[in-house]
Length: 162
Image 1 (tube, rainbow, N blue to C red):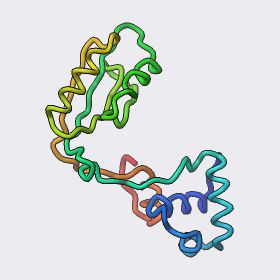
Image 2: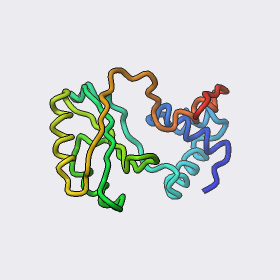
Image 3: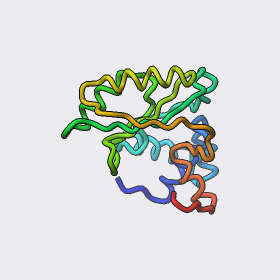
Image 4: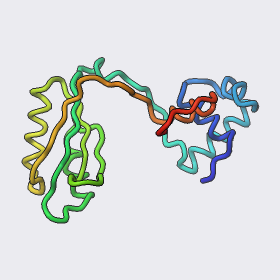
């Protein structure tokens, strides 16, 4: 779907505050509340907006430690097989196939380093995993929520690399 400036502005407003009323968003983008609702409905129907959710601080849920784990797999392991296997672990909050030597990169959140270690041990025990390489996050330097670049471009600022 092709998004025009108003669609992008509406999405940016929703990313900034998904609980904003259609009237509030309309005021920000220069449309009536009903016009905003029609556009949001269309954006949802087209799949451009996939849902609404709350962003929760992982620490509030006890997930105080995070790591990135590279997976090195046997032969031509299919991405779908990797996805199916790692989806069984609630600690894996994101997974992606990547370029380079590793086959996949996992983002893990856990209660502590020992918890991370146990999760990595269980993942490494999967039949297709040859080895893993992990990095524990010490501190987050930038933590931009998905879609925030739309808000920045709407406000006139631009950050390189986004």
